[in-house]
Amino acid sequence: MKAGFSKRDITPPLTIELDGYAPRNQYPVGVHDPIYVRSLAVTEDSTRLVILSLDLLGLEKPWVDRIKQEIHRDLGIPFENIIVSTTHTHSAPSTGIFRPTNHSWMENLVEHCLSATIEAFRKERPVRYGASIGNVVGINVNRRNIRGPVDTSVPVLRLETERGVVATLYSFACHAVVLGPNNYYISADYPGASNRLIESYDECGALFLQGASGDINPLVPSTKLTDVYNRGKGTFEEVERMGKILAAEVLKTSNLIYETKENAEIKCLQEGIELEIEEIPSPEKSWYEYRASRERKAKTSDYRELMKMGIAEMSNYRYFKLWQRLKDARKVVTVLQACKIDDLLIVTLPGEALVEIALDLKKRFDEWKLIVAAYAGDYLGYIPTVEELKKGGYETSLPWRILTEESIRRLIEKTFEIVEKLVTS
Image (spheres, rainbow, N blue to C red):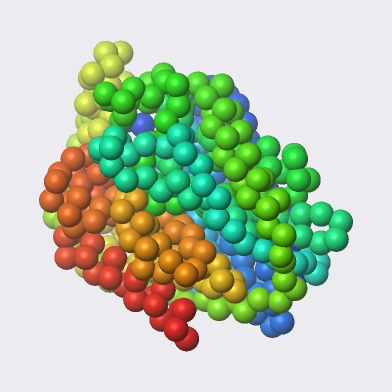
């Protein structure tokens, strides 16, 4: 096996609004820490795989397709062997899902993904690999039910030469929202801090895959268990603290991998699925309401009014943009991917999957080391289980959830099917 790693700084000028929070009413004022695209290249015989992780809230399929097309055109890598994921930081510039973005920056983003991937393959060298699963308790909490399930597992893939570690791939399930709506600095949040610490300690590349964290928030000193959704008091000190705790578990788990191998079977699958979305306002009405709420928001400093107008602004922009990609009035096409590297499995989900989905997958395929990479391949909003959907709440309401109950059921079933197909092939 050969592996290589590269990253590119994708931090834009301070002229694009930050994603993630409705009350924000100004452009970013600075850069606390750069945001990156990280690319991990792996080759076994003639099979090549690339995994990209971007410090962004999310990327919709049209942009993911652009990235894959460029990589496929230049390097000939099959589409199913290209995984594009985001860390879901809420302190990154908008990519056009809930707020406008800058098209030139997005085009540059595609080029940075391609450049990082080309360099990662050029830097490939023979490696040994090993995988294991760590566990970290006390830094994430179920925000829909503080006594509800969380995923504390930390799957780790270590790629090393005799001289040291080339790259560490790892995953954890927790919203990247240590920083709240009061933050106006660009930041990768805790995944960026964790990556930076791992790279510094092991002198290697680090790549974080966000897990099924749709209903999971950070558990840090500023977290109020009586109001877990409220992230108004998060600090950069807490970002560093959470990053240190996660990085320490990754490094511990990585360094406890005593048995490594030179060769691994790599196999990937990708399947498309057409899904129905809920009824949404017309593009004409959405655009009118978006402009109106944006204007009203600009005229107020009252926090409650900022929240109200911000939700209306983001909702209607979301509806308007959705109309631009619908196959017909109510259907959208997305993709699911699954990849096997020996006994490590990676399965993607196109949005904010609730943690129960990942826990069910890990229970069903418990003989495998399983990474559930949510926010990968597309962004279709929240993906609750049918049971959670019926309970209501933020994660189940428009525009944050757009898929119908039947579409959610089919998407989850399809995810299990593609993993089953991969492990039995």
